[in-house]
Length: 247
Image (cartoon, rainbow, N blue to C red; front, side, top):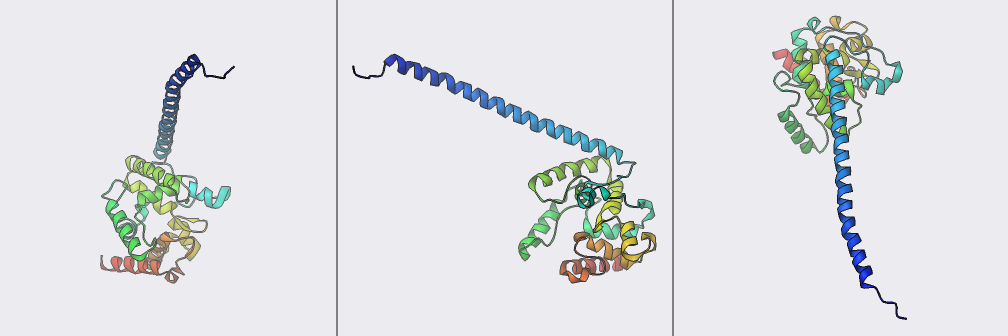
């Protein structure tokens, strides 16, 4: 009459648990392997895709960039193009010194610039200075959106190394000059010259060129005419103007 547990039932239950545990472990390892494979395959596809496009960009100018599509949608138009050989060495040196002083020395990432920017930002308590190289900026312009996430930063690093490996310094600088954002719907220094000064880049003065490169740090909010309203941009302008004057 009493409802007692059967010892044989307890043995069966214990046996079932012991058999189930290895199955769970097996399923866990299966899914971990599958996730790892998916991540590896996604990386491989991404690297190959960026590599193929970068090879095309060695001799072909991009019709549009991801940034242009993000900003302007399908109304985005291909910027007018200035061959690097048609820009003066002085302009190139001014731009490099302002944006990425070690451009010719590093392989896409400037660790010292990152450290300096971090120290400066901690000192002022806000993001006042970035440590991105010209190569990193071009990577974002060509292939990424402006959204700041850890994933975007990770993809940016991969793209940067590929651009350095495939394009080389001169082509990176040439594409940067022609596709950098310089205003709302304005990309590249020639289109910026036409937009702000109603003349081609070749006809702009040294001061006008310096003003345009100054607003690279904040092209949506400021123009060459209003840059002095921002203290950071004003310091950038003074810095590169003095550097240009004495070099």
